[in-house]
Every structure is written in structure tokens, then in C-alpha cells.
Image (cartoon, rainbow, N blue to C red):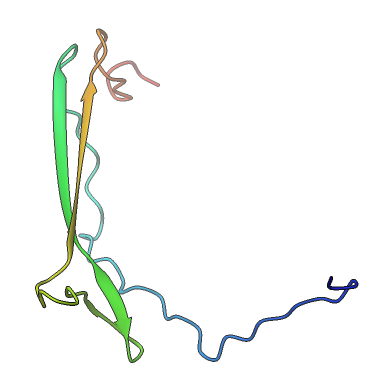
Length: 91
């Protein structure tokens, strides 16, 4: 057993943060154009990054040497009532 000893780990160099996002400034307000009681499918594809010599670069496949991408699809249905719109009811 460990007999009450505390294990410690040393990280020689911390991982730098990812690049700053490039959002427009200021960020425009959200607009809800979803139709009530309707099925939607959203698909998002992201290019993955990896840390290489202290710099975030596009990840490439080990054998393919092609950029690594991840795709996620989400299916959902909106409700019967329209989405909340804070400007429409004075709240």
C-alpha cells in the first residue's frame, strides 16, 4: 500500500490556452427564427487542433496526413409555444 504517502506529479510545461475566439465585437444579439412544433437537424463540423511545440496547429491524421475533423448532428423538435422573446412582453 501507500501507507498514507501523498503522490505528487510535476508538469514540466503547462499547456497554453487555445487561441482567442474571433467573434465580432460586439457580439450581435441572438435571434430566434425557429418555427414552433417543427423538427430540426443541426450538423456542426469542427477542425481539431493539437499542441505542437507550444503552438496550437491543425491536427492531421497519423496515416492519412489529412486534417482531422469531427462532425456532430443533433435532432430536436421545438415546442408548441413560440420561444420566449424578452422584447415582446415588456420583461
